[in-house]
Length: 359
Image 1 (cartoon, rainbow, N blue to C red):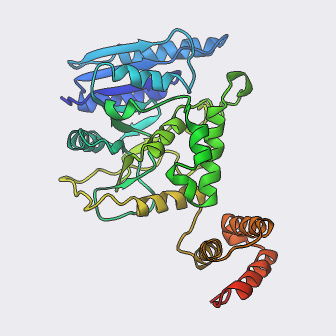
Image 2: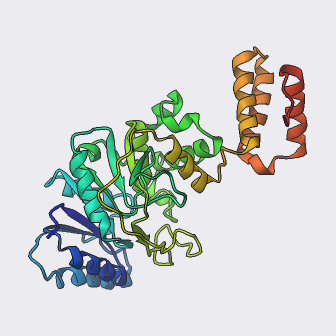
Image 3: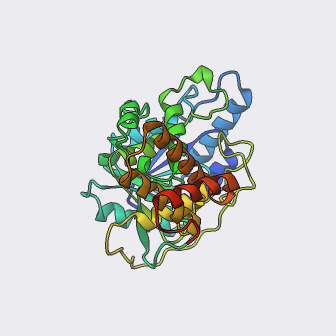
């Protein structure tokens, strides 16, 4: 019997719900929270599939279990249904594991999450425990820390979730003040998150037929970034997302390497990291998400040029804007940098610095 509370979030995919149920049968959770979003308006298929998904769970719990349900009659959508479910669970418990219906967890994740939920229960900085690993190895530890919460199968505490705001009401102020850690990073990272946080902040249902910002998880990213929270990233991948298909709201690209990724059992006892450095895990995640290679000579050169230029020289405002824009664009493009950029950089180097452009 597994005692840590588990929340499962289902909708209209009974085939995936059944696969999730088969995993739960193996661990027999003692406390199970089940939340199901309602059918979309005038969608008869949804009505049938939502009922089937709920029936599969409710009619097949064959172990002793305390069950609580939150079944919506109407559709709340991806922006509201998951966070409503998570908040509802935390009205009853202090900690829990959250699983959406397309996330198939390797069994060892449950013990991994339970141990770390208990170990870091009173540590306000640690806010997220992920089942997803990076594709590249971070270290020889069982897990490492990052500032990015990967959320396909994860766990957290009420104390952390209480900081969550689905509307990210303070984003405009944070953006202007450049208060968040990612705003000092590579332009690709800044562009990616600012674009998505802007979309979430300005979200209007009538203007978002594709579901582009009709989401809950970017707000969780924002929450950790705003509060300098730490996310635990396991060394081994312990979740397979089977939801990359046409039934998904956002993850429709079945050709991605994240689709149905293989899983591996975690080894116990856990090997804890010696410190809380996030730099290596962040670098690997940024490289994998944004194709940023911070070890490349070109990236180092461009970053070094910009840093020295801005710190050493007082340039006319228009010149400063031009030069920094060129350097930002060059860093952003990195490998596809044009000969024109190289010419301008060569000029900047020769005029201001003693070291050559390619030296």
